[in-house]
Amino acid sequence: MEFLASIHSITVHFPIVLLLSYVVLEIISAFSKKEIFSRAAHITLFLGVIAAFLAVFTGQQALDLASKWEKAGAIMPLKAISKHEDSANLTMWYFVAILIVRTFLVLKKKFTVNVKFMFVVLALLGAYFIYQTGKYGGKLVYKYGVGTELKKAEIKNND
Image (cartoon, rainbow, N blue to C red; front, side, top):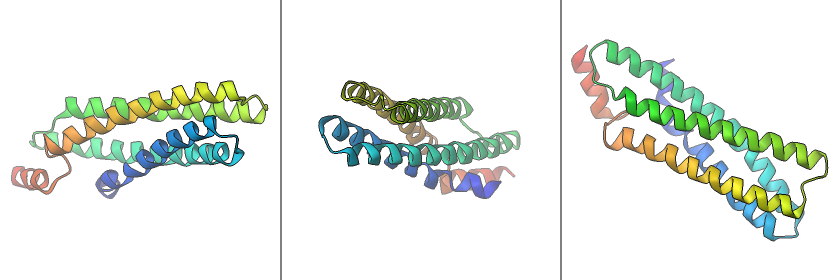
């Protein structure tokens, strides 16, 4: 599973882009009378949720690997990793909930103009969650060197 851990830094960019694009499309949809923006928002949200599952899954593999390395003597910031993990899980499940409710309302033909504005607020809150998750992930890389060649060299030196 080391391969899956190694692609975490790549996979995280897909939900970031897709979910933030969803936020923008949701805003455009609320202010536009064109149904295409609402459909695009829905599809982008769906793809973003799938990408988030992949990012969280590869992140879990990276956490498992970090725990293994710590047991082998490497210094790993597991508390900081845990904050990032908690934030990522919250973000993913938050957008899953938005997707479920949005899909239900669309299918029941209750996704009205007023409801669209409520979803803009929910989407903006989700964007904040994305920001928090990225902030914690960035701290892992730029403060602690997790996932960098320097950290890999440190781990090899401890073996």
